[in-house]
Length: 484
Image (cartoon, rainbow, N blue to C red):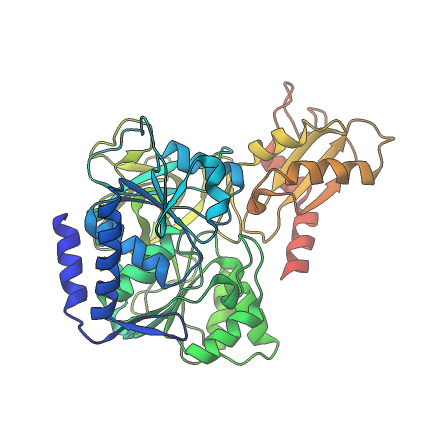
């Protein structure tokens, strides 16, 4: 057992009979939690598991298997349910997963998994080499079509969890409700490991019961029902979920008065939304992180908060800015990408631009073209655009979804005689092969092709993205207002 894991396990054991975990109906003490984890460790050892994929809905079983992998040195590979089938296959194959626990075993038969008790297993002839010390491989949302594996050590993950535990101690959180999928690293670490270090009780109902429907649909009324029933002290929300919560309260829904700390991150948060939350008395604190940094890097807190910033760096990291304003991070960074050479002990270039404001980090945007939806999913528009223009009716396409609940595409038809129904059929065909967070949810028909003459593309056909944003700003704002 890695030293950091042994220390973590000891801290959990010290809480004894204190409530540790609940699915909203049944409850486990810390002693019972560790007993459940040890029982699953035995199962992993019995089948000589090396790399375990977890394909479960949120619930106690997810956490039992996750901690079992951590405690017995099996590499854990969370398998997001919001990934498309092809993306899930990519995760399993590229990570060399030999063991899987899933709620729908039949879904993995085609990948040669066979049942062995509660687990599924397959032979993996030549699994990809991993950096020494890899405890978990978390996959990004597929910014270039296929998700990318980020290899993390136990020490890095637990350093983040401990920092979060330390800075939230003043809020005296005793009950945390997991809203985001546990396959999302942010909820996995900040929503389970950190509260457990604090001796809190983690509530893990199924995703549908808190209103989560895939990666880009949310039913606020379901979350309000759970808030009223469980009365948690803390939540982690994505920007779109916070918007739904704030809007519902403004429209007369009861204010969740048990909340003491609501962290929001995973994408840009409009300062106006934070001000609306503050006016309602909601204790909302924006943060910032990267999978490559084991999730959270900066976070606002009750004692140090500035709306418009993502907060100050946590205690386990160093953050500085490059000459061009790019955010660089050192400390608790990843070991390397799956299938690539290990990372050295160097500053990690985040790809985000920002500046300091009295020690608070203020972000401007990303250096690359990818955008982050309001649900925290990374999307490279070029990936989707390339799929769209493969359809016969579409000559050019531009996709935009920065901080939006739905992605907007502007389409140039190959012929003015093509009707909207034909364009919709082409969009539907592309959407069928995409995960829901990358799909075209709404689209506009362009009045004219993107070209050098109107400043919307270069002479060789490359899109001028900033110009397109300005040109279609009215349509973007109209759509955003309709969704708020």
